[in-house]
Image (tube, rainbow over all chains, first blue to last red; front, side, top):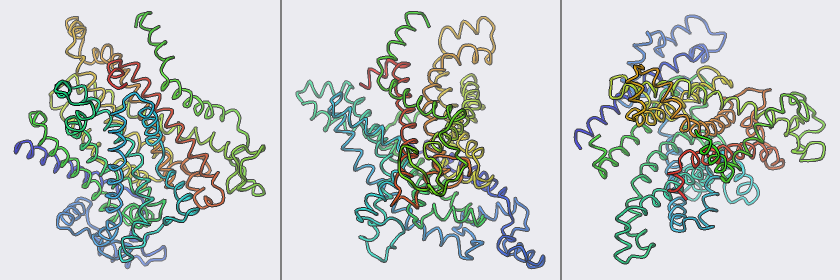
Length: 314
Length: 285
């Protein structure tokens, strides 16, 4: 297990190193000089040069890359070109919206998918199973930002149960936060819950056809008892893997939904930073999201290997 | 495929409800896109402010938008954008990914195989949407850049599926026979392996096609896809957002177009998989 962990950890570090080079290189080709954008078209050449030097833009690209990476490793993400505030602080503020949103969506995904998947598997082939699986097909195919707009129309504009957009802030209390985050979380969760319910159902059906379930049935357990006592626990392995991947997807995938609901999260930050050519913010937010995804995948792999020794041998 | 096998595949296809329904939905939108080259109910670049934001009527079956443009015509022309972006993105994925997968399988266990597969893992690890946003932001928002952004993420998908399909074939007798006959790895890959993994590629292609349509819609919704005046479904949804409280039809129809196209492709993918892989069919139903 230790060797496996070390290999996966090395692979994690390598992935992060390559990711940082790719992100830095991609952002560097963005057209427009941030210094001239900040100072406007009438800027004096010497003021421009002074600002370029202050931002470190006069340094060679390789030097800037290493300065950026060293900063990242020390938790110093640099200073935003447009807001003149530390990027780390801006990201922390935005994470206070994006992270709870992703966690809320993940919670809803599990709460919807588990009962649906288990119910469908226990009634395999019945009308209920077919209908539920049909609904999950719809859930997978629905563009979540469109679903979000329809929910705004029904639940925010017509029924006025939830906010149509904006974030009340944590100071406004949990109820206000839930009012702002529920619709975005449902919109994010629906396609993921549909996928997870389908995975849950097929994982359960696969497990139910295994020999140990036949043994359990031969022992006198009913189909339902065999499902709850034996099949479910074994079916959870692939399901947990998918949940891990979905979390990173929900965190990164929130960027469009945040735009539908005007939520001040990482997604909005990235779009604002792109239009303002605030390179250091774009680089840091993208790197952070990539880091989160790679880290979650790494943890999922470790958890998977811990419960399934066959994987370690590979 | 023998005549008997062909007949049984055709009868299976006709009995497969997923394939029939999915195929029909896909044909509707493909047909709409093709017809739009020859005929559209109204010119989509023509504004008609006197008739703006009108609900469905005999003159405008799906109503008009905030510039008075016909929504049905916009959806028909928008289908072209969505389909073109998704098809080319799948094409990029296949053109690069399939040879890489074949190559990796032919040199199984070598450094090359390792490099290709680790490279794939790396692309998989990136949150695709974030990177697509970054690419379109770096090179400017356009349909072409959306295609590249979506296409890049299709490469590892096709490389991986080709490699795994090819690996099982390399140990088969008919491949051994081809090797004994003196054929090189490249020739065997293209003459014998590729035709046998084609089924897998068609099924995966359908799925990636539907994901491409969703991705294109998402990117154009945030303004990073096809630019105005080219109509695109995602852009139509973004435009409709301001008017949703009093003109929900503006949001309803483009969204339904995306939903039904993606649903059609997904059902078709499921249906094709059932036909190509009878083992799976028995396991799932």
